[in-house]
Image (cartoon, helix red, strand yellow):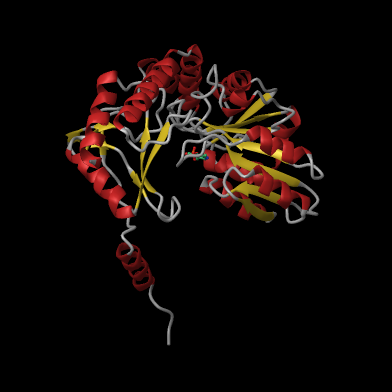
Length: 389
Ligand SMILES: *Cc1c(COP(=O)(O)O)cnc(C)c1O
Protein backbone atom coordinates (compact mmCIF):
# COMPACT_ATOMS: atom_id res chain seq x y z
CA UNK A 1 0.00 0.00 0.00
CA UNK A 2 1.39 3.40 -0.98
CA UNK A 3 1.68 6.37 1.27
CA UNK A 4 -1.55 8.35 1.75
CA UNK A 5 -1.81 11.61 -0.09
CA UNK A 6 -1.06 14.90 1.55
CA UNK A 7 -4.55 16.09 0.66
CA UNK A 8 -6.16 13.13 2.38
CA UNK A 9 -4.14 13.51 5.59
CA UNK A 10 -4.71 17.27 5.77
CA UNK A 11 -8.46 16.90 5.21
CA UNK A 12 -8.75 14.21 7.84
CA UNK A 13 -6.95 16.29 10.46
CA UNK A 14 -9.10 19.31 9.68
CA UNK A 15 -12.26 17.21 9.96
CA UNK A 16 -11.16 15.93 13.38
CA UNK A 17 -10.44 19.47 14.56
CA UNK A 18 -13.83 20.63 13.29
CA UNK A 19 -15.59 17.74 15.02
CA UNK A 20 -14.03 18.91 18.30
CA UNK A 21 -15.42 22.39 17.66
CA UNK A 22 -11.89 23.78 17.68
CA UNK A 23 -11.49 25.00 14.13
CA UNK A 24 -10.37 28.62 14.17
CA UNK A 25 -11.17 31.40 11.76
CA UNK A 26 -9.42 34.66 10.99
CA UNK A 27 -11.36 37.85 11.52
CA UNK A 28 -10.89 40.24 8.60
CA UNK A 29 -10.19 43.85 9.55
CA UNK A 30 -10.24 46.96 7.40
CA UNK A 31 -8.49 50.16 8.35
CA UNK A 32 -6.11 50.86 11.18
CA UNK A 33 -5.80 48.87 14.38
CA UNK A 34 -7.68 50.54 17.20
CA UNK A 35 -10.66 50.15 19.50
CA UNK A 36 -13.23 50.74 16.72
CA UNK A 37 -12.01 48.53 13.85
CA UNK A 38 -14.12 47.54 10.85
CA UNK A 39 -14.58 43.78 11.15
CA UNK A 40 -16.17 41.86 8.29
CA UNK A 41 -17.39 45.16 6.88
CA UNK A 42 -18.93 46.40 10.14
CA UNK A 43 -17.54 48.83 12.74
CA UNK A 44 -17.29 47.28 16.20
CA UNK A 45 -16.03 48.17 19.65
CA UNK A 46 -13.01 45.93 20.24
CA UNK A 47 -11.58 44.57 23.48
CA UNK A 48 -9.40 42.12 21.58
CA UNK A 49 -6.14 43.86 20.76
CA UNK A 50 -2.70 43.90 22.37
CA UNK A 51 -2.33 47.53 21.30
CA UNK A 52 -2.59 48.50 24.97
CA UNK A 53 -1.34 52.06 24.65
CA UNK A 54 -3.13 52.89 21.41
CA UNK A 55 0.19 53.35 19.61
CA UNK A 56 -0.33 51.05 16.60
CA UNK A 57 -1.88 53.89 14.60
CA UNK A 58 -0.62 56.87 16.63
CA UNK A 59 -0.04 59.88 14.32
CA UNK A 60 3.51 60.49 15.60
CA UNK A 61 4.43 56.83 15.10
CA UNK A 62 2.91 56.76 11.61
CA UNK A 63 4.77 59.96 10.69
CA UNK A 64 8.06 58.53 11.95
CA UNK A 65 7.48 55.46 9.76
CA UNK A 66 6.75 57.56 6.66
CA UNK A 67 9.71 59.82 7.20
CA UNK A 68 12.14 56.96 7.76
CA UNK A 69 10.73 55.02 4.77
CA UNK A 70 11.58 57.98 2.54
CA UNK A 71 15.13 57.96 3.85
CA UNK A 72 15.77 54.23 4.32
CA UNK A 73 13.27 52.61 1.97
CA UNK A 74 11.26 49.59 3.04
CA UNK A 75 13.36 46.44 3.09
CA UNK A 76 16.46 46.06 5.24
CA UNK A 77 18.04 43.97 2.49
CA UNK A 78 20.06 41.57 4.60
CA UNK A 79 20.60 40.12 8.06
CA UNK A 80 22.12 42.23 10.84
CA UNK A 81 25.54 40.57 10.54
CA UNK A 82 25.75 41.26 6.84
CA UNK A 83 24.49 44.63 5.61
CA UNK A 84 21.04 44.82 7.24
CA UNK A 85 22.01 46.71 10.40
CA UNK A 86 21.33 50.41 10.02
CA UNK A 87 21.34 53.52 12.18
CA UNK A 88 17.65 53.34 13.24
CA UNK A 89 18.28 49.81 14.55
CA UNK A 90 21.25 51.02 16.57
CA UNK A 91 19.31 54.01 17.93
CA UNK A 92 16.36 51.83 18.91
CA UNK A 93 18.62 49.31 20.66
CA UNK A 94 20.14 52.12 22.69
CA UNK A 95 16.69 53.53 23.53
CA UNK A 96 15.46 50.10 24.66
CA UNK A 97 18.54 49.59 26.84
CA UNK A 98 17.86 52.94 28.44
CA UNK A 99 14.12 52.26 28.77
CA UNK A 100 14.76 48.99 30.59
CA UNK A 101 17.72 50.32 32.58
CA UNK A 102 20.05 47.64 31.19
CA UNK A 103 23.54 47.91 29.68
CA UNK A 104 22.56 46.70 26.22
CA UNK A 105 19.68 45.50 24.06
CA UNK A 106 19.49 43.66 20.74
CA UNK A 107 16.57 43.64 18.29
CA UNK A 108 14.87 40.54 16.94
CA UNK A 109 12.34 40.26 14.14
CA UNK A 110 9.69 38.74 16.43
CA UNK A 111 9.21 37.78 20.06
CA UNK A 112 8.98 34.18 18.95
CA UNK A 113 12.49 34.43 17.53
CA UNK A 114 13.86 36.31 20.55
CA UNK A 115 12.63 33.48 22.77
CA UNK A 116 14.15 30.83 20.53
CA UNK A 117 17.41 32.77 20.79
CA UNK A 118 17.70 33.17 24.54
CA UNK A 119 17.08 29.55 25.34
CA UNK A 120 18.86 27.83 22.48
CA UNK A 121 21.90 30.13 22.28
CA UNK A 122 22.74 29.60 25.93
CA UNK A 123 21.70 26.00 26.65
CA UNK A 124 22.36 22.64 25.04
CA UNK A 125 21.77 18.98 25.77
CA UNK A 126 23.89 19.10 28.94
CA UNK A 127 21.58 21.71 30.48
CA UNK A 128 18.04 22.05 31.79
CA UNK A 129 15.29 24.61 31.32
CA UNK A 130 12.41 25.05 33.77
CA UNK A 131 9.21 26.62 32.54
CA UNK A 132 5.87 27.65 33.99
CA UNK A 133 3.11 25.41 32.60
CA UNK A 134 1.28 28.49 31.29
CA UNK A 135 4.27 29.95 29.46
CA UNK A 136 3.78 31.30 25.95
CA UNK A 137 4.11 28.63 23.24
CA UNK A 138 7.26 30.27 21.87
CA UNK A 139 9.07 29.66 25.17
CA UNK A 140 8.04 26.03 25.16
CA UNK A 141 9.23 25.66 21.57
CA UNK A 142 12.48 27.39 22.55
CA UNK A 143 13.01 24.81 25.28
CA UNK A 144 12.40 21.95 22.85
CA UNK A 145 14.65 23.42 20.17
CA UNK A 146 17.52 23.95 22.61
CA UNK A 147 17.70 20.20 23.32
CA UNK A 148 18.12 21.01 27.00
CA UNK A 149 16.05 18.91 29.39
CA UNK A 150 12.66 20.66 29.53
CA UNK A 151 10.77 20.59 32.81
CA UNK A 152 7.49 22.39 33.41
CA UNK A 153 6.29 23.43 36.86
CA UNK A 154 2.68 24.08 37.88
CA UNK A 155 1.55 27.63 37.14
CA UNK A 156 3.19 30.23 39.43
CA UNK A 157 4.28 27.48 41.84
CA UNK A 158 7.73 28.53 43.06
CA UNK A 159 7.89 25.74 45.64
CA UNK A 160 7.45 23.09 42.92
CA UNK A 161 10.12 24.81 40.86
CA UNK A 162 12.43 24.63 43.88
CA UNK A 163 11.86 20.87 44.18
CA UNK A 164 12.55 20.36 40.48
CA UNK A 165 15.72 22.44 40.71
CA UNK A 166 16.99 20.55 43.74
CA UNK A 167 16.60 17.26 41.85
CA UNK A 168 18.39 18.51 38.78
CA UNK A 169 22.03 17.72 38.14
CA UNK A 170 22.44 19.31 34.73
CA UNK A 171 25.38 21.61 34.07
CA UNK A 172 23.47 24.89 33.59
CA UNK A 173 19.88 25.62 34.57
CA UNK A 174 17.60 28.36 33.28
CA UNK A 175 14.20 29.29 34.71
CA UNK A 176 11.99 30.88 32.09
CA UNK A 177 8.66 32.57 32.72
CA UNK A 178 6.20 35.00 31.21
CA UNK A 179 6.13 38.24 33.24
CA UNK A 180 2.40 38.68 32.59
CA UNK A 181 0.60 35.48 31.56
CA UNK A 182 -1.16 36.08 28.30
CA UNK A 183 -4.40 34.19 28.92
CA UNK A 184 -4.88 35.04 32.61
CA UNK A 185 -3.30 38.47 32.89
CA UNK A 186 -1.72 37.58 36.23
CA UNK A 187 1.91 38.37 37.10
CA UNK A 188 4.62 35.75 37.69
CA UNK A 189 5.74 35.56 41.33
CA UNK A 190 9.18 36.80 40.32
CA UNK A 191 10.58 37.34 43.82
CA UNK A 192 9.77 33.78 44.83
CA UNK A 193 11.06 32.36 41.55
CA UNK A 194 14.26 34.31 42.02
CA UNK A 195 14.66 33.01 45.57
CA UNK A 196 14.32 29.44 44.25
CA UNK A 197 16.71 30.14 41.40
CA UNK A 198 19.27 31.45 43.89
CA UNK A 199 19.12 28.37 46.10
CA UNK A 200 19.37 24.82 44.84
CA UNK A 201 22.72 25.23 43.15
CA UNK A 202 21.68 28.26 41.16
CA UNK A 203 19.76 28.91 37.96
CA UNK A 204 19.57 31.84 35.55
CA UNK A 205 16.24 33.64 35.44
CA UNK A 206 14.73 34.77 32.13
CA UNK A 207 11.51 36.81 31.95
CA UNK A 208 9.47 37.31 28.79
CA UNK A 209 7.60 40.52 29.59
CA UNK A 210 5.67 40.78 26.32
CA UNK A 211 2.45 41.90 28.07
CA UNK A 212 4.06 43.80 30.93
CA UNK A 213 6.52 46.25 29.39
CA UNK A 214 4.99 49.64 28.75
CA UNK A 215 1.92 48.97 30.86
CA UNK A 216 2.58 47.56 34.36
CA UNK A 217 4.73 49.04 37.10
CA UNK A 218 4.80 52.60 38.48
CA UNK A 219 6.51 53.93 35.32
CA UNK A 220 5.45 51.15 32.94
CA UNK A 221 8.80 49.38 33.01
CA UNK A 222 7.03 46.06 33.43
CA UNK A 223 6.88 43.17 35.84
CA UNK A 224 10.47 43.62 37.04
CA UNK A 225 9.64 47.15 38.10
CA UNK A 226 6.57 45.89 40.00
CA UNK A 227 8.80 43.48 41.90
CA UNK A 228 11.78 45.82 42.25
CA UNK A 229 14.15 43.42 40.46
CA UNK A 230 17.23 44.33 38.43
CA UNK A 231 19.88 42.83 36.20
CA UNK A 232 21.44 40.79 39.01
CA UNK A 233 18.10 39.15 39.78
CA UNK A 234 16.89 38.65 36.22
CA UNK A 235 19.81 38.58 33.79
CA UNK A 236 17.64 37.94 30.71
CA UNK A 237 14.70 40.20 29.82
CA UNK A 238 12.71 39.67 26.62
CA UNK A 239 10.34 42.38 25.39
CA UNK A 240 8.13 42.53 22.32
CA UNK A 241 7.35 45.60 20.24
CA UNK A 242 4.04 44.44 18.71
CA UNK A 243 2.01 44.86 21.89
CA UNK A 244 2.16 47.97 24.10
CA UNK A 245 4.66 49.64 21.77
CA UNK A 246 2.25 49.18 18.89
CA UNK A 247 4.69 48.25 16.12
CA UNK A 248 6.48 44.97 15.37
CA UNK A 249 9.57 43.09 16.48
CA UNK A 250 11.19 42.26 19.80
CA UNK A 251 14.34 42.65 21.83
CA UNK A 252 16.43 41.10 24.55
CA UNK A 253 18.01 43.36 27.18
CA UNK A 254 20.83 42.34 29.50
CA UNK A 255 24.55 42.63 30.09
CA UNK A 256 27.08 43.39 27.38
CA UNK A 257 28.23 39.77 27.40
CA UNK A 258 24.73 38.29 27.22
CA UNK A 259 23.75 40.50 24.29
CA UNK A 260 27.02 39.88 22.45
CA UNK A 261 26.56 36.13 22.95
CA UNK A 262 23.13 36.36 21.30
CA UNK A 263 24.55 38.35 18.38
CA UNK A 264 27.28 35.72 17.89
CA UNK A 265 25.41 32.50 18.63
CA UNK A 266 21.63 32.89 18.24
CA UNK A 267 20.55 31.26 14.99
CA UNK A 268 17.22 33.11 14.99
CA UNK A 269 19.25 36.34 15.00
CA UNK A 270 21.93 35.41 12.51
CA UNK A 271 19.94 33.61 9.82
CA UNK A 272 17.12 36.05 9.22
CA UNK A 273 16.52 39.40 7.56
CA UNK A 274 16.75 42.44 9.82
CA UNK A 275 13.58 44.37 10.62
CA UNK A 276 12.87 47.19 8.18
CA UNK A 277 14.83 50.21 9.43
CA UNK A 278 11.77 52.47 9.12
CA UNK A 279 9.96 50.17 11.54
CA UNK A 280 12.79 50.66 14.01
CA UNK A 281 12.48 54.43 13.56
CA UNK A 282 8.71 54.22 14.16
CA UNK A 283 9.30 52.15 17.28
CA UNK A 284 11.81 54.68 18.56
CA UNK A 285 8.98 57.21 18.45
CA UNK A 286 6.51 54.84 20.13
CA UNK A 287 8.97 54.09 22.95
CA UNK A 288 9.27 57.84 23.46
CA UNK A 289 5.48 58.29 23.61
CA UNK A 290 5.10 55.27 25.92
CA UNK A 291 7.73 56.69 28.28
CA UNK A 292 5.73 59.91 28.69
CA UNK A 293 3.13 57.95 30.67
CA UNK A 294 -0.13 59.66 29.63
CA UNK A 295 -1.28 56.71 27.54
CA UNK A 296 -0.59 54.39 30.45
CA UNK A 297 -2.64 56.60 32.79
CA UNK A 298 -5.58 56.44 30.37
CA UNK A 299 -5.25 52.65 30.09
CA UNK A 300 -5.30 52.25 33.87
CA UNK A 301 -8.32 54.56 34.15
CA UNK A 302 -10.24 52.31 31.71
CA UNK A 303 -9.16 49.16 33.58
CA UNK A 304 -10.15 50.66 36.95
CA UNK A 305 -13.58 51.69 35.71
CA UNK A 306 -14.15 48.20 34.34
CA UNK A 307 -13.05 46.46 37.55
CA UNK A 308 -15.28 48.68 39.73
CA UNK A 309 -18.25 48.28 37.39
CA UNK A 310 -17.78 44.51 37.14
CA UNK A 311 -17.63 44.16 40.93
CA UNK A 312 -20.81 46.26 41.34
CA UNK A 313 -22.65 44.10 38.82
CA UNK A 314 -21.36 40.83 40.20
CA UNK A 315 -19.61 39.84 36.96
CA UNK A 316 -17.14 36.98 37.54
CA UNK A 317 -14.11 38.93 36.35
CA UNK A 318 -10.72 38.08 37.81
CA UNK A 319 -9.06 41.41 38.59
CA UNK A 320 -5.45 41.65 37.42
CA UNK A 321 -2.79 44.40 37.40
CA UNK A 322 -2.39 43.96 33.63
CA UNK A 323 -4.62 45.03 30.70
CA UNK A 324 -5.78 41.40 30.31
CA UNK A 325 -8.94 40.55 32.25
CA UNK A 326 -10.28 37.00 31.95
CA UNK A 327 -13.93 36.23 32.55
CA UNK A 328 -14.01 32.48 33.09
CA UNK A 329 -17.16 30.77 31.83
CA UNK A 330 -16.23 27.07 31.99
CA UNK A 331 -17.34 25.17 28.90
CA UNK A 332 -16.23 26.11 25.39
CA UNK A 333 -19.84 26.34 24.24
CA UNK A 334 -20.69 28.93 26.88
CA UNK A 335 -17.66 31.08 26.07
CA UNK A 336 -18.29 30.94 22.32
CA UNK A 337 -22.00 31.75 22.78
CA UNK A 338 -21.15 34.76 24.97
CA UNK A 339 -18.59 36.03 22.47
CA UNK A 340 -21.16 35.68 19.64
CA UNK A 341 -23.88 37.45 21.62
CA UNK A 342 -21.49 40.33 22.33
CA UNK A 343 -20.60 40.57 18.63
CA UNK A 344 -24.32 40.79 17.81
CA UNK A 345 -24.27 43.89 20.02
CA UNK A 346 -21.27 45.22 18.12
CA UNK A 347 -18.63 44.33 20.72
CA UNK A 348 -15.62 42.18 19.91
CA UNK A 349 -14.36 40.05 22.81
CA UNK A 350 -12.65 36.78 21.90
CA UNK A 351 -13.57 33.44 23.44
CA UNK A 352 -10.47 31.45 24.43
CA UNK A 353 -10.91 27.70 24.52
CA UNK A 354 -8.87 24.59 25.23
CA UNK A 355 -6.18 23.68 24.31
CA UNK A 356 -5.08 27.32 24.69
CA UNK A 357 -6.47 27.23 28.25
CA UNK A 358 -7.16 24.20 30.50
CA UNK A 359 -10.33 22.09 30.07
CA UNK A 360 -13.28 23.70 31.86
CA UNK A 361 -11.61 27.13 31.89
CA UNK A 362 -12.90 28.53 28.60
CA UNK A 363 -13.27 32.26 28.92
CA UNK A 364 -13.78 35.66 27.48
CA UNK A 365 -10.47 37.46 27.27
CA UNK A 366 -11.03 41.17 27.66
CA UNK A 367 -8.10 43.47 26.95
CA UNK A 368 -8.07 47.18 27.48
CA UNK A 369 -6.43 50.03 25.64
CA UNK A 370 -5.58 53.63 26.42
CA UNK A 371 -7.93 54.43 23.54
CA UNK A 372 -11.04 53.08 25.34
CA UNK A 373 -13.29 55.88 26.59
CA UNK A 374 -15.41 55.64 29.73
CA UNK A 375 -18.44 55.28 27.42
CA UNK A 376 -16.74 52.29 25.72
CA UNK A 377 -16.14 50.61 29.08
CA UNK A 378 -19.72 51.26 30.22
CA UNK A 379 -21.04 49.82 26.97
CA UNK A 380 -19.04 46.64 27.58
CA UNK A 381 -20.30 46.37 31.17
CA UNK A 382 -23.92 46.75 30.05
CA UNK A 383 -23.51 44.20 27.28
CA UNK A 384 -21.80 41.66 29.54
CA UNK A 385 -24.55 42.05 32.11
CA UNK A 386 -27.22 41.44 29.46
CA UNK A 387 -25.45 38.54 27.78
CA UNK A 388 -24.48 36.65 30.94
CA UNK A 389 -27.76 37.04 32.85
C1 LIG B 1 3.10 37.73 21.83
C2 LIG B 1 4.07 37.01 22.67
C3 LIG B 1 5.26 36.53 22.13
C4 LIG B 1 5.55 36.57 20.66
O1 LIG B 1 5.90 37.82 20.25
P1 LIG B 1 5.80 38.15 18.67
O2 LIG B 1 6.61 39.37 18.51
O3 LIG B 1 4.34 38.35 18.42
O4 LIG B 1 6.35 36.97 17.96
C5 LIG B 1 6.17 35.95 22.98
N1 LIG B 1 5.91 35.83 24.29
C6 LIG B 1 4.75 36.26 24.84
C7 LIG B 1 4.52 36.08 26.30
C8 LIG B 1 3.80 36.84 24.05
O5 LIG B 1 2.65 37.25 24.57
